[in-house]
Structure formats: C-alpha cells, structure tokens
Length: 418
Image (cartoon, rainbow, N blue to C red; front, side, top):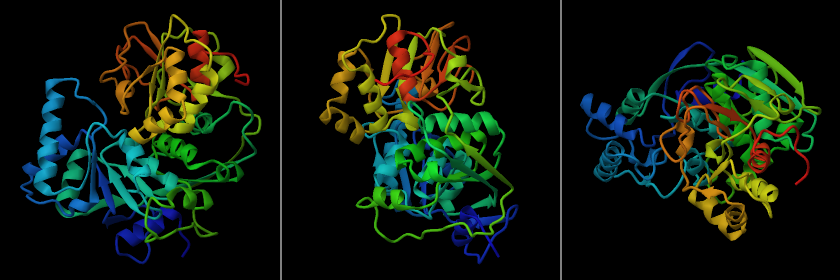
C-alpha cells in the first residue's frame, strides 16, 4: 500500500509492516525529552513503582523553562532532577547553562531523520525540521515511557501543505507559519500529521523549517514534518552518525486534506491577541503602541534571527518607551552571537540580553507584563495571561517586524530594507 512519512515511521517503531490512520500502535521511541517538568515525571515514575528507567541513554533532560530558578519551588524541582539524573545514570543532562530544550536537542545531535521522538513539551513537533516524527506528551505518559520504553499512539491522518512562489522582502518563515495558522485555524490540524512541500520549503534552511514545525503544534498537529533533502543532510553532517533511515511519502499516499498556497504576494503577518490564528497582514495592525519587545524563544532564537535584529538595530536605539529583551536559543548561539559582534550591536542599541532559556515566553519570569501593557514577541503563543497579566496583550511577529517596532515604539506599517 501507499503511505505518508509519519505512517512509515510509526510502522517501523511499532515493529509492524504497515499502519493506517486511526490504528492504535505500541510505539518504541528512539529518544524522549523532558525539561523542568521532569520533576513531575519523576513523581509519577515513583508513584507507579518504577525503579529503573528503560534506557538512560535515550532520555534527554535540558533545564530551560525557569532558569536560573525563580522560586524555592522551582529550585527544589531542579534539585530533584539533578539527583535523579545521577541515580539513574542519565548521560544527556543539560543544566541551566545550555539553552532551550528543542534547540539543544537539534543542535546537539539528539535528532535524526526517521526517528520517533516524544517530549513533555507541546513544541516537540520542532524536530520535524530534520525529517523526524516528534510530538509532545503528558508527564504521566512520559513516566510510563521511562519505565517501559513504549507508549500507545494513535496513527494520525496526514495533511499535505504545498507552498510555492517566493518570499518578498521582509517576509520570513515565521510569517509563513502565522499565515498558515490564519488559513487553517488553531484547530485545522488537530491530531494530524502535517507534511510540508513546495519550492518555498525546498529553499528554507533548517532554522526556518524549525520555526514552521514548531508552530505546527499551534494548528493542533501531532507531527509537523519537512521531508529529508540536501538542507537536512548539510545540517546534520558532523552532528549525527549516518545510522538513520530516510523516509519519503509514496506518490499515491493518502492525505486527509491537501492545501496549495502561492505566497509570492504575502506580506509580513501579525497574530493579534488572544489567539494564534487571529492573524492579519502587518498593515492591519500598524500603529499599535508597544511596551515590550521579545526576540528569541524556541521559535525564533537562532543565530539568523539575532543577526536580522542586529542588522536593523545597528547604530540605532530602542525607543525610550520600549523594553527590548533578546534571548539566544542556546549557549552555542549565545557564543556565536558574541563572536560575530551581534550582541555588542544589540547592547549598544540598549537591548537587554537574557540567558538562553524560555524566560518570558511562558510567563514565569524575566519579562512579566503589567496590566494594560502590550508586547510584540517572536514567540509562539499569545494567549490571555500567557506573559503575565490577563489584562496585558501579546502580539506575534517575525524578528524583522519586532526589531522595527522596538525602534519606533509601535507596530510598523511595513518593513523597509535595514
């Protein structure tokens, strides 16, 4: 029969010849990831009476959400995780210095094409940027995986999205992700796998594919996958060994839906409060005054995102009414940004550089909004109360739009060359 990429991966990881949408399979993931919420996973692990994890080499734990610890409760959770890591002999533990879990997973070689990876974070879908099938699960489910090395999964239907045309000036992968959210809505891919194709996708580097797969979850997707190609091969060279399997969808694979878009005339996009699919062209949000700008997160905290911001902010100053927070996605990106002079440019523009981590994105610390304040962020969610007060507003954009807004103090009408 004919199958999609995720169907082929799930068949292999379930020890079956083939699987079909709607089937329940017992899948054996190649890797599993938990971050600060590993503390909760540990509690469930103990509750079910488990003593040893199934394979300490397949468990990756980066601390990233509340780093450094912002409260005694978080500090205690971090302590319990460090003790568990030693007890179980978990080799791939990244303490507070390393960066955001998804970036750490991808850049440190923990993701290979054709793998099945599960994580206790909804944006685990990010790893589809390297042609893996990856998805978020709950802490109780992860405790069961830690104990047994397997999990029941329902095989999802697959949506095929084809993007043709070309990006015009000032339009990025983040704009494409927001555009697709506006078109498909936040429920448009509920428990579906999404495969991305087309000339535009072929020319997007892994960093941009990361953004696209990351935000697939905001459409409800179980998996978001960009098929393996030369860009994938180039990125993983030197990061992973060649012991991986490349899967392609069969020509006659069955898709639940097919979408085709030509984005040649698409302008920068904005997601307005308080829904990720409340998306409008940039011009329709122009003039909204901004109190805070956040550039970073697992969605847009890579070196090219920071470089874009630096190019725009060079020899300029952040508006006196605006706080600009910049968060490199990892320690590696932080170091690269130092070496390339990016952070010096941003600091001279009077931005505040935060340590690699999730920071204000989840509303835990490092940039909480007060009632009535508005933030323009390159993060992935703008839900009510997401970044602090329920009376605050969060708008989502690309780093280009965010950097422009930081200078003028409001959402710009358009983005001119830097």
